Image (cartoon, rainbow, N blue to C red; front, top):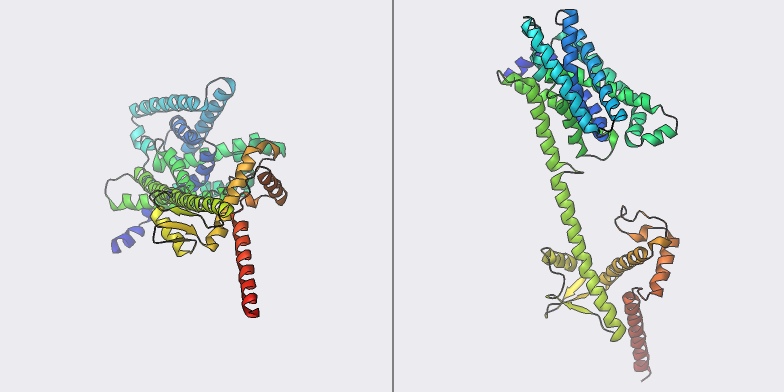
Length: 444
């Protein structure tokens, strides 16, 4: 711990920590929009397209200058983005092909220029080759100032224009319909992403920068369905990845910071993939398990209700189902225990199952929902489009007028669930019979 505290007091470590954490936050925030717009590869193309701009800036200025490098990288990245959009717009080439084409051409040009500069004997001194895989240790105070300023501008612009960027991300036609300058906003978003890529080149490098942009965003996708929360979570994951990668690089001699930042982000992605509360594998498995158990439970109650309906209609007796003939699945024994614990069913000594009065009420509602849904699906063309799938297939949540129409159809087709009413009629008759018997006994 003392070593860690002593290490954190080193100004160089502090600069790198600040730089990588801010880079992670800005990349995570803007990466969310790139991911949702299905432009994940665009960040990779921008990063590779930035390399020739850096080399040309060095050739023009003649020495290492982060300001000139960033200007060159930004211009080159924007030209690469414009080339991709132009190819898509003016040809029949698809987006992924255009991105791959521009990425390869610009990166090839960058490597050629880099080799030429190295042959001049100035490339290694300028540290240009470090832009391929990144070299966070070379970040100094002036670089941190640039990264901090650009990151704050990127985050502030995203916050100020969040609603507009959200609209063009999910429904560009609607945004255009209400008068938003969609083309200008698209260009602005591309510029913001290019700036995020440019400030990350020194720390992460052109090869890995796309992962810095996308990995936090895809990790956040497993935790929430809302864009505002996703942007915040993605920013936090990006920032934490930057801090963890930098600390690991500092603690282990000779290990590069950029790849360690990406590995830290990847570990957080794997954690999100497993434990994410919205799309995580374990959460989805648990949700599927609960759905299957609910289906088995409803099938058992429906079977018992149908048998009860037949028995009450013919012989005025409660219907039973033999336990060996009932729903048979992995969950069945657990479902029986749950139903008995909730006093919805009873099982006699002959292993025959029957509904209790409480179970009959519950089963009646389940059967009513199922039969109403059947009527709706059989006559779907007569009704407006409903969102019953989103409401958990519960037709009873629909408007009362619709329920009345479906109930009328149930009566016409003879599908109205009658077991509950027959049971109540049977009980009423028994109570009347008992009252009459008591009166006669009193007179005698």
